[in-house]
Amino acid sequence: MTEITLLDGGMGQELLARSGDTPTPLWATQVMMDHPGIVHDVHAAYFAAGATVATTNTYAIHHDRLLKAGIDDRFAALHMQALAEASAARAENGAGRIAGSLGPLVASYRPDTHPPHSEAVAKYSEIAGLLAPAIDFFLAETVASLAHAAAVLEGAKVGGRPVWLSVTVDDEDGSRLRSGEPVSALGPVLAQHGAAAVLANCSAPEAMAAALKELSAFRLPFGAYANGFQQITKDFLKDSPTVDALHARPEMTPARYADFAMRWVDVGATIIGGCCETGPAHIAEIARRLTAAGHRIV
Image (cartoon, rainbow, N blue to C red; front, side, top):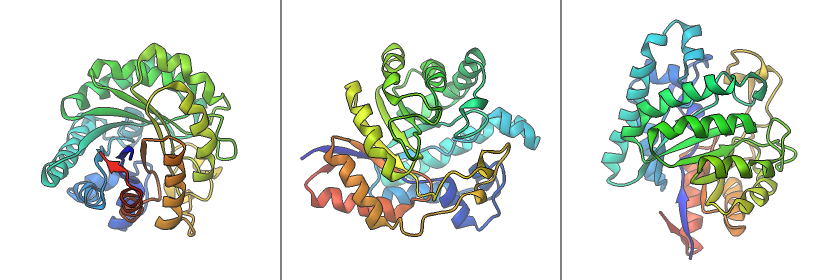
C-alpha cells in the first residue's frame, strides 16, 4: 500500500463548461468575476470526487493580464476571492489541503515571454505574500524553463510555505521542458531553492512516462497531472490567446486517463491529478482505482 496525494483536476476549462461563457484572455479569472460561487462549486465537486487538495483559482491572476483588461486595481481582491472560495469548500468538506497556484507570467507554454529574473521574482513574491496565510503549500504550475523554475522558487520563499514545482514538458519528448532544456537540468535549481516536491503538468499523458523517469532522479516526492488537449496549437501561442484555440481529446475518458495515472503510480509517483480538460469524473475514477489497488489517498 502506498500513500498517494490526489490533486484536483482542471479548473479553467471546468469553469467555462459550467458557465457556458465565451472564453476571454482572462480565462478562469473572468468566470470567477462574472459568476461568484462557481469556483467554490468546482472545488466542492473535486473534494466529493476524492481529491484531497484544492488548487486555488489564481493561476492567471497576474498584473500583465489584468492591466490589459483595465482591472489591475482588483489584483489583491481577486486573490482573496479565490482563496475564500477554496477555503469555504474545504471547510464544508471537513478535510483537505489548499495549494496556492502560481501560474506562468505573461503566457503559458511561452518561455520566450518570461520576464527578467529580478522582475519575475518580485512578481511571484507579491503573490506568495497574498496567498501564504491561507494555504498549505504553493503549487508552481506549468513551469516551462529553467529560468522560470528559478524565479518562481525564489519568489515563493517569501511565503514561508513548501513549494511544489510542476513543469510542462514537450508533448513528443517528455524528457525536455517546453523551452527545449532537459528536465534533468532541474536538479541544481531544485536543490538551491529547496523545492518540496517536483511534478509534470499540462502536457500530453503520453509524455509523462519520460518526464517521470527524469523527475524520479531528484529524490523528492514526484508526480504528474496531464491535460486532455489534442495539441497546443499555434493560435494559442499568440499574444493574449483564448482557450477556444485548443480542443479536447474526445477519447480521453475518465477510464483512459485513469489508466495513465495508475501507470504513473506504478513507477513511483505519489502525487497525481488532472490538468486542463479533466474534470471531477476523471478524479473520481482515479480515486476508485487507487482504493481498489489498495493505496491510501492522503
